[in-house]
Amino acid sequence: MNKQLIKVEGIAKRYTGRDGTATTVFENIHLGIQLGEFVCLIGHSGCGKTTILNILAGLESASDGYVFVDGREIRGPSLDRAVIFQSHALMPWLTVIGNIAFAVASRWPEWDKATVRRHCQKYIDLVNLTGSEKKRPAELSGGMKQRVGIARALAIQPKMLLMDEPFSALDALTRGVLQEEVLKICAEMRQSVFMITHDVDEAILLADKIVLMTNGPGAKIAEVVVNTLPRSRTRHDMHRHPHYYRIRNYLIEFLVDRSRTFDQAAAEGNYDPRHPPVVTPGVHEESRAGNPSRAHPGAKPLVAVVH
Amino acid sequence: MSRLTGWRAPALSILLFLLFIGIWHAATLPTNARRTVDAEYAKLVGRAAATGQKSSFPTPADVGAKIWQHLREPFYDRGPNDKGVGIQLAYSLARVLTGYLLAALVAIPAGFLIGMSPTIHRALDPFIQVLKPISPLAWMPLALFTLKDSSISAVFVIFICSLWPMLINTAFGVTSVRREWLNVARTLEVGPLRTAFRVILPAAAPTIMTGMRISIGIAWLVIVAAEMLVGGTGIGYFVWNEWNNLSITNILTAILAIGLVGMLLDLVLALLTRLVTFPE
View (cartoon, helix red, strand yellow):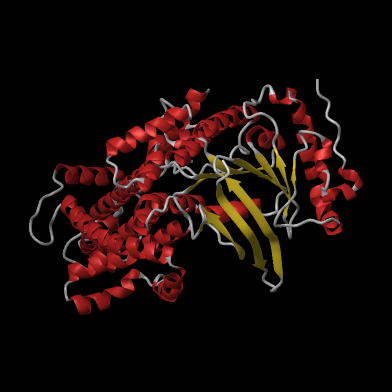
């Protein structure tokens, strides 16, 4: 569990505008993801969340810094890291099984058709799409499309699963069902996951660690919140746990208020971007000792009401 | 109500057709009124026109009879200047399809290259912009001079006119393939050739087919004019030959046939476009 799978060292992304002025979207991002860990990244639009995910995927390159997977620096996309895209990115001319088989045949080119088929079927069954193998994406609902996207990513058995707001385009009911299934599947497979979201409840339900990003431009990682809810949590009972509201309020308060003012507070405290503070607001408020945001009066979390 | 509206459009079509035939019929009715016709002209055109008993323009019934005659024997061959409409259409179609398929063989791979490489796109763009607006018939003398064969020259003219829409649409289709699909291929470490055939080609297929549909329409327009120039065989030559024979009924029959074949070609391409188009 202590094996560092992904190590992000000081990455930054800068753009040069038409008038020659450079904009720093984010900089000095240090992050570690351990084997079997589910990490969520939360932040407002424009802080470069998707860019970070794309850099981890190898689809974009960082202006600065390095990303290591298993101790090796990444150079471009790889079958090690599967991406689940926000807009599912299924190919409309392929059937459900065709879309997954395209990925499986890319991963194991030496496999014959029957083996590829069997392998695909296993993952179609896993995401509860049995019976829809021959349908094309246009015949599927939004939730079913995203299930195909999940099956396609899991079928290549990646070391790392990267998800870019995978459920944001779905209705609340479908989203909830899919979140639970993903939680179950990832726990069973001990899948390492890095996910972007702006849904606080989604992060608490799914993540072991929640990485908070400040607002862009010049965004950075403010804190890493450890989710202290037991891993057996479900959508239906997690709000009964005493830690739930504490964590939730802490996250919301960060998004509403501190994500904006963090830079100021950090300048006053002893914030080190290499080791962003790790906090456990779920356990008790005192865990926030040494938190630089303490200097900020608005930072006091709302006390959770737990029945 | 909805069943009624379903019949409205076809009913209106039939009504318009009958109206058209009716006006045509009325306009070509034989008249008994005496006309003052120049004596010289009367000598030249013969009794019918001079006395005004029968219109010189064929009546719908004349054309109908002619069409029936052609339909009964579309493929007769009585020497170089007297072949059935079916044979002439077959010649034209053969030329169109040859030139068109040759153009597709060149345009689709070239369009792929242009679409995939911005450098090649920028390098070839000036040539395409200059060559595209040239009337295909302007190439005819050059083709006759270099190829030294009228029939091959007609095929070349079809080739040239079919080339541009296919080339431009293929390049456009390839450049506008959704970024995500390419990203999926990249994260799966799919090679460039497999990406081209398994991702870009199916994604661009609807746009490519649209270009092919535009091309076949233009090719069918151009073949009539080209055959009028090169002569010998084909529906364009037939029209010109019948003009020299002053057989307006034959010309009208040919015009109708050209329209129907053009419609069929378009329908076939529309059907093929539907086959490769998948809604998202």
